[in-house]
Structures are given as C-alpha cells and as structure tokens.
Picture 1 (cartoon, rainbow over the protein chains, first blue to last red):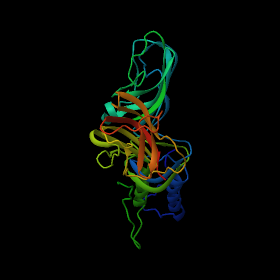
Picture 2: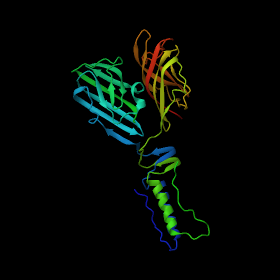
Picture 3: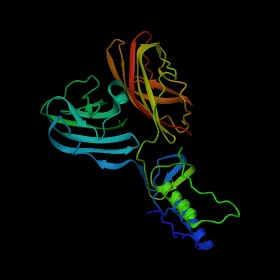
Picture 4: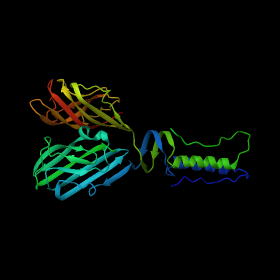
Length: 173
Length: 178
C-alpha cells in the first residue's frame, strides 16, 4: 500500500484547516496504523514485533538448485534455507544410492571469506553409510557445503546406501 | 543517520504558502517510503512481514578481546559473533597447546541469560593428541553470565585434555541475552 496524501494545495487559495489536518492524519495513519508499506534505508530499533515473519529471503525450497553430489539416485532430496540479513539457515535431508566417496551440495549464497576453512566447520550432522550411522561434521567453502562421513573424514562407500542430514547457519558474502 | 526531514518551517504570523505545505507532506511521505532515509524508533510492531534487504547487524571479531581458559598458547583464536536482537550467533575456531584445565571462552562482551536450564548451546569438533590423534564431538554450555565452557568430548563430559597437548575446537553456538 502506498502512502497517499489526501490533499494537494493550490497556490493562492485559502488553506482549509480540515484538509491540513487530514494530510497530517494520513501520514500518521500510514506509519502507525499498518496502512502503508514503509521502505527505509536503515533503522535503529529498540524492539521489533512482527506478527507474521522477519526475513530477507523467506523459507525456500533449494532442493533442486542445491545439486547434491555423491549420489547416483535419490530416495529423498530436501534442502531448505531461510536468509535473515546475511545469516543463512540451512536444513537438509538427502539419501539414496551413493556415488563416489564424498558428499556435498551447493550453498544458496556464496559464503563470507571469514567462513572459509576452519571456522566454518559445522556439527550436528548425521550420516548413514551402508547401514553404519555416524555423528559427523560438514564444512563451508565459498560456494558449497561438504559433508564428512565421520569425524575421521573417512570415505563413503561407493554404490551403497548413503544418508546425510542436519542443519547449519553461516554468514553470506 | 539520515532521517526524513521537511524542507519548510513555517513562521508564526507569516502567510502560509500552499506549495510549501505540499512540499513538506511530499518530503515526509517519500522519506518513509523511498528507501533512502533512516529511522530511529523505540519499538516497532509489524502487522504483516518485516523484510530486511541488507543485514541485521555486523559480524564482530572478539578473538583478541576475550580470554581462553584451557590453552597456554595459541595458533588460532578465531571467534566471531553476530547479534540479532537478543540472539547471539557465535562462530569459532581455536587451536593451540592445552593447559590442563577445562577450556572455554570468558569475558564475552555480552551478558548471557542462562537461568532456564542446563542446555547445550552448541556442538563442536574437538581434536587433541592425548594418546591420539583424537576427534570428538564436544558441546558448549553456559557457565557464567559472560562465559562459555567447552566439553571437548560430549560422550564423556568430564574429559579435559591434559596439559601440554595440542587442542583445537571449532563450531557454532547460539545464546541469548536477557
């Protein structure tokens, strides 16, 4: 909804007090009574209460675009993300027949250089390699998330059942 | 901050010019909707959705200002936080030589609200060479208003890397202030 002012005054005509008041009321109602969309450069806010959602990018199905590698076929391929500012939250569940010895998928946004390498190792990952279950870790590079089979970074078994699931958050570039 | 302003201030006793009124209304309306101005308000209630185009706040490096019990020397002290309201996301990678006491992060620049239960606030990958090399999943708990305690081996919460070993921890955690 736009912020519409009711009256545009004509030069030389007497100013109508009621119309002047109405214009002020239009601005007050638009900003205070949920009657317009406010669009500003930056805001310093003590507290914010959003009835529905706060987001930069709403919860998005990234399953196809994530292009997981390490599987020749999938039973399930779920990758979702939500972005708030530069923080990206990612949830994933991918299983099927494994191909090769590794597992990874593309990030929805390139990560900040601060995130590369050591600081970007994420825990809270569960893997299943041919029936053996592990708690494991994953790592964020500039463009991808790579999942280790186990804490020792052993290779996945080619051609067998492979599951990777978990969640993480990272800072986008 | 570049706040919305009005171009005309009316002087008592002077003739009010319609065009000036129009210009003031227009400046206020555009200042609130054109995305070029800043605002500073006490509290905001959004009836529908709040769409953040830029960032909520900056990623802050604190590796040089906090203290690290559990290490006597360091190779890496990478600790950052991101503040979103009262939520703090903490990213870390710390490596060096162990001192034989429980590791953690102290003198954090914010006060953690931890009065609601013995939660795990984050998990991490810990590595040491105590009879190893060993890789563990560890966890983080809050043990003070400005400090976090690390248990390098979650399956054995009493485990502390002995003095003089290599010790690295890396991961993420989420805490809240009051």
